[in-house]
Length: 595
Image (cartoon, rainbow, N blue to C red; front, side):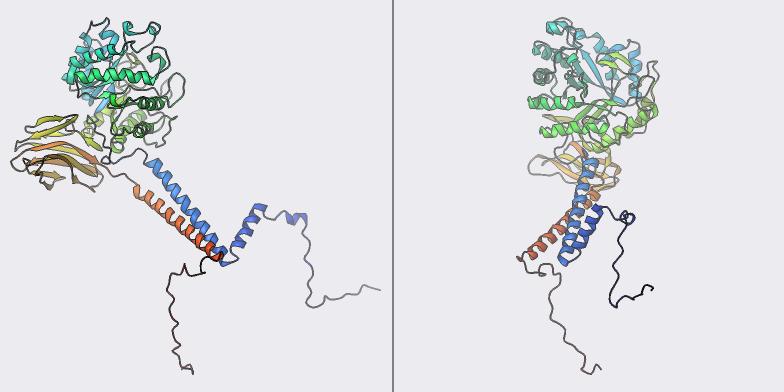
């Protein structure tokens, strides 16, 4: 008898087949299942949906705000407009500069090299003054070689930063005789030496630098570097400078970022300790060694252990933390290493391009950066050590490098004569005058004053605005200023004499502009310099990112707060988020018949 077939009863369904092992392999991973379950839970009610939106808004806002802050900290770190306090008063127009040791030259070579420097726009050199050579015995000075150097450079209009270093044996401790350099046992001897140099050369010394690389043991008598002892030395040295030439800026010594230990950032740590030891009153300028490494001048990574142009920002930050942000930084060694048979670096053409681009970036973005001194004149040993091949203006054979040619072209284009972002003193080359002007000095501030009706001044600058430091008084003459040809009258009359910063132009296109100043009537006109402003670029996108992030974060937190308050019964549901007023219902206007 066959099996009887029975149809399934109505309304009953067969149970689903069991999944085989092969089917279970296609299930989502457990994490995905949990996320999906969480989303289903949150979307299962109005409150849970609102909580999900609140979380998304808060997360998006946090990411935007943090991202905007990171962008700002990377793109704008160290960038300043030039008119925000503290104003860095530069003592020069940030002319092209280079390291040299002209004592290596013969008397016949000296004029030729000085002419070459002048022709390529070098207006400032950093020249070591060897104490051991100038004062080989106590009180016995030998000046012949240095007199010839100072005379030749002076004829060419080239200023000198004198580096006071290399002590003679008679001032050293007995165990420091073999060191490359060593501090004197009696720091008063250093004061007398520095004073003798500053007295002899007067204002032909554009600045004086006290010692070299004191954070290296071989420059400190073979002993561990001692910031406190160095502060004592520069205390005496600065007295020597200021006693002979109060106007000469005093530079802190250059520091080695990687002394013998090989650890980087030792220069920054030493600078910080100099400030902690009370050294700030004894110097006017901080010196920094700025090595471009293998990165372009536009690399904005700021890393104490790194090697690039942007590392200079860290010196500025150490100074600001010490409350010394009104002083400038000078890059006393600056440049890139050109690759060669035994050196890693960049190509000579890149070295030339990077050198000029780095100078332009510093002038545009860093009003706190002063002159930037190219690494050396020729390769080989000099009074500061050994200048490596591939970093110099001239090769070992005397042939100009591609870098020197690029600097010469930069000078010939006139861009070196353009006033850069920040304060420009009236003594700078970029502040040009005609007619009769008198120099007036009040403390460290220098002014130009005139009563000559034909007197005028001119500044060509690059930026988005310009201010002038002028004197208001009863005797002040009316002044006519022309900014890009547009006349700007200026009345400086005042009941009481006072120096004031006046806005001449603002909101200009970022580019080259020309300012002309002329007397428009009888009286006296006094000016203490100008300040070139450049608005920090790309600020509005960062502000938009941060503002949007803060707005979304606020909206998310607000929604979260009110939702939780409703669920706990502490807030009447639905009242706090109503964006529209409750209006009375509109009566039904239709007739009962629908007609």
